[in-house]
Length: 153
Image 1 (cartoon, rainbow, N blue to C red):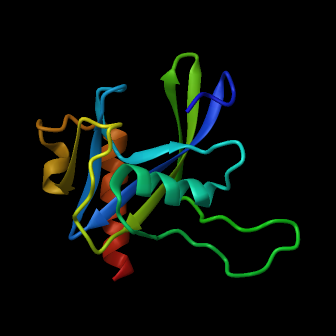
Image 2: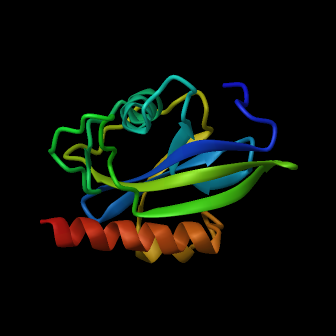
């Protein structure tokens, strides 16, 4: 998707957990293992982006762990509360403001998107493995997602 703004775009990142493992993808543009996600389009509610990106990049059905009030709002509608927010370089000077979500799924049968070169269910023990060379923020957020999924049971 083309950038909406020259300096900042909003994106969603989703840490999906199944059976005490988190789904991470190898993103060729960044050369990193990261969670799935993507740009919030100009005409799209952030919750629509969550559902669309998960479907496009994994084919999985998930349940998001963030809160979302089930209360009518005259002026708009509530969105799922992200667990964290994160700003990072995308293509300097362009940056992304990421709304970071946690989700769980009942299936481990994802479909590899053509946006990624690989995907894997990664256990907590594997988060510091040389196999993935994960950045500290991805390790931190993966651990938080695994913990949130355990507390959700």
